[in-house]
Every structure is written in structure tokens, then in C-alpha cells.
Amino acid sequence: QMMLCSLIPKFHDIFPNGIPSLRELQTSLELLWTEGFDPDGAKHHKFKMVGKRTWIGTVEVWSYLVFRGIDATIVQFVKTQESRAALGK
Picture 1 (cartoon, rainbow, N blue to C red):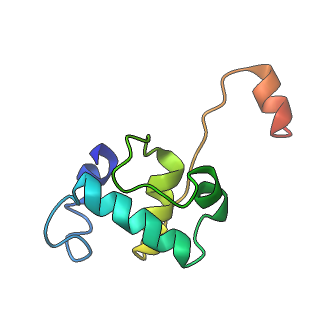
Picture 2 (cartoon, one colour):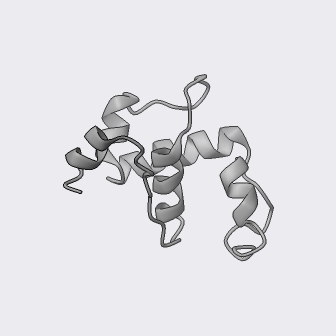
Picture 3 (cartoon, rainbow, N blue to C red):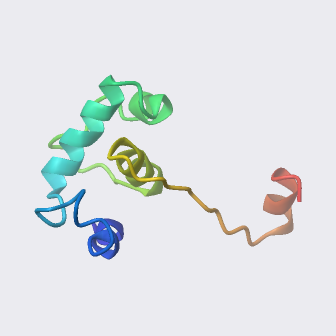
């Protein structure tokens, strides 16, 4: 919800009622999974999010934004040499 809050002014037409509630986010995640978005996330969460106390992280927010028609990208900031090497840097 914190990430979405920062986007509300720019995407008021997509979020006319403001920040979605936690339950609305959970319901949307389950819906987007049934429509084929983020199959890895769906499998990880066993296609169930509503009512669970499961962490909604960066990938889940990305899936939600893309599902809502917002062009989104995840950026990972890499600190260690080992991590950079894994990315081919």
C-alpha cells in the first residue's frame, strides 16, 4: 500500500477511489493469477492470498500494476561483488 500511495496522484484515473485496501489487493492478486499473470508468484502463494498474513512484496505490486495497465519495472540494487557477478556485471 505504501508503494501504491506514492503513485495515486499520477494515476488517479486508474485509482479513482484512492489506495486499494489490503483485501482489494489480495483479491486482485488472486484474480490476476487466474488470468495467467505472475505464474511463479501464484505457485509460490499456492494461488491463495485473501485473508492470509502473507507479505505483499515488490513482485506482487509489480504484477498488480501491470495487471492494472501501468508500465512497471523492478530494479534491483546490487551491493556485493557476488551479486553483480550473478547478473553478469
